[in-house]
Length: 100
Image 1 (spheres, rainbow, N blue to C red):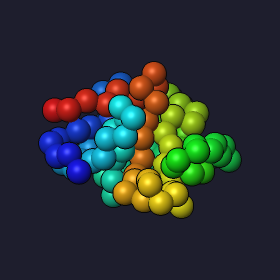
Image 2 (cartoon, one colour):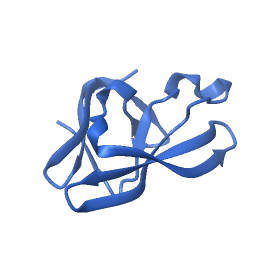
Image 3 (cartoon, helix red, strand yellow):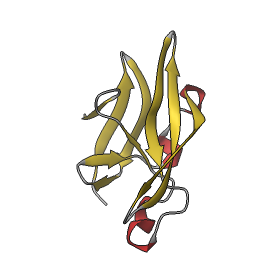
Protein backbone atom coordinates (compact mmCIF):
# COMPACT_ATOMS: atom_id res chain seq x y z
CA UNK A 1 0.00 0.00 0.00
CA UNK A 2 1.54 3.34 -1.02
CA UNK A 3 1.63 6.18 1.46
CA UNK A 4 1.82 9.94 1.26
CA UNK A 5 -0.86 12.57 1.42
CA UNK A 6 -3.35 12.43 -1.46
CA UNK A 7 -6.48 14.44 -1.93
CA UNK A 8 -9.42 14.64 -4.30
CA UNK A 9 -10.87 18.07 -5.01
CA UNK A 10 -13.78 19.58 -6.87
CA UNK A 11 -12.86 23.19 -7.50
CA UNK A 12 -11.39 24.40 -4.20
CA UNK A 13 -13.26 21.84 -2.09
CA UNK A 14 -11.52 18.74 -0.76
CA UNK A 15 -13.94 15.80 -1.03
CA UNK A 16 -11.47 13.10 0.10
CA UNK A 17 -7.97 12.95 1.56
CA UNK A 18 -5.77 10.28 3.02
CA UNK A 19 -2.24 9.32 4.02
CA UNK A 20 -2.67 5.80 2.59
CA UNK A 21 -4.27 4.57 -0.60
CA UNK A 22 -4.14 1.87 -3.24
CA UNK A 23 -2.92 2.45 -6.79
CA UNK A 24 -4.57 0.28 -9.45
CA UNK A 25 -4.26 0.79 -13.20
CA UNK A 26 -3.12 4.39 -12.69
CA UNK A 27 -6.06 5.27 -10.42
CA UNK A 28 -5.74 6.27 -6.78
CA UNK A 29 -8.23 4.35 -4.62
CA UNK A 30 -9.06 6.19 -1.39
CA UNK A 31 -10.03 4.31 1.78
CA UNK A 32 -13.77 4.70 2.42
CA UNK A 33 -13.21 6.58 5.69
CA UNK A 34 -11.27 9.27 3.82
CA UNK A 35 -14.36 10.52 1.95
CA UNK A 36 -16.30 13.51 3.22
CA UNK A 37 -19.74 11.87 3.07
CA UNK A 38 -21.74 15.09 2.76
CA UNK A 39 -20.57 15.37 -0.88
CA UNK A 40 -21.41 11.81 -2.00
CA UNK A 41 -24.62 10.06 -2.99
CA UNK A 42 -24.88 6.57 -4.45
CA UNK A 43 -26.30 6.15 -7.92
CA UNK A 44 -28.00 3.29 -9.75
CA UNK A 45 -25.09 2.80 -12.16
CA UNK A 46 -23.23 -0.51 -12.02
CA UNK A 47 -20.44 -1.69 -14.32
CA UNK A 48 -18.38 -4.87 -14.51
CA UNK A 49 -14.62 -5.36 -14.70
CA UNK A 50 -13.36 -8.82 -15.61
CA UNK A 51 -10.80 -8.98 -12.82
CA UNK A 52 -12.15 -6.53 -10.19
CA UNK A 53 -15.86 -7.38 -10.30
CA UNK A 54 -18.95 -5.18 -10.18
CA UNK A 55 -18.52 -1.47 -9.46
CA UNK A 56 -21.02 0.87 -7.83
CA UNK A 57 -20.94 4.64 -8.32
CA UNK A 58 -21.27 7.94 -6.50
CA UNK A 59 -22.41 11.32 -7.73
CA UNK A 60 -20.51 14.18 -6.11
CA UNK A 61 -22.27 17.46 -5.33
CA UNK A 62 -20.31 20.51 -4.18
CA UNK A 63 -22.38 23.68 -4.05
CA UNK A 64 -24.07 24.05 -7.44
CA UNK A 65 -21.66 21.61 -9.11
CA UNK A 66 -23.01 18.08 -9.55
CA UNK A 67 -20.75 15.44 -11.08
CA UNK A 68 -22.81 12.40 -12.01
CA UNK A 69 -21.14 9.02 -11.51
CA UNK A 70 -17.79 10.70 -10.84
CA UNK A 71 -16.50 8.07 -8.39
CA UNK A 72 -16.67 4.28 -8.21
CA UNK A 73 -15.94 1.47 -5.80
CA UNK A 74 -16.16 -2.33 -5.55
CA UNK A 75 -18.38 -3.45 -2.64
CA UNK A 76 -17.75 -7.16 -3.33
CA UNK A 77 -14.58 -7.39 -5.45
CA UNK A 78 -13.24 -10.57 -6.99
CA UNK A 79 -10.30 -12.30 -5.28
CA UNK A 80 -7.52 -10.43 -7.11
CA UNK A 81 -9.02 -7.07 -6.12
CA UNK A 82 -9.96 -7.76 -2.49
CA UNK A 83 -7.41 -5.14 -1.37
CA UNK A 84 -9.61 -2.38 -2.85
CA UNK A 85 -12.91 -3.47 -1.30
CA UNK A 86 -14.97 -0.30 -0.76
CA UNK A 87 -12.01 1.93 -1.73
CA UNK A 88 -13.10 4.82 -3.96
CA UNK A 89 -11.53 6.05 -7.20
CA UNK A 90 -12.42 9.15 -9.20
CA UNK A 91 -12.70 9.93 -12.90
CA UNK A 92 -9.72 12.15 -13.66
CA UNK A 93 -11.81 14.20 -16.10
CA UNK A 94 -14.25 15.13 -13.29
CA UNK A 95 -12.24 15.28 -10.05
CA UNK A 96 -8.66 16.45 -9.42
CA UNK A 97 -6.60 13.85 -7.57
CA UNK A 98 -3.20 15.05 -6.41
CA UNK A 99 -0.36 14.08 -4.11
CA UNK A 100 0.29 16.93 -1.69
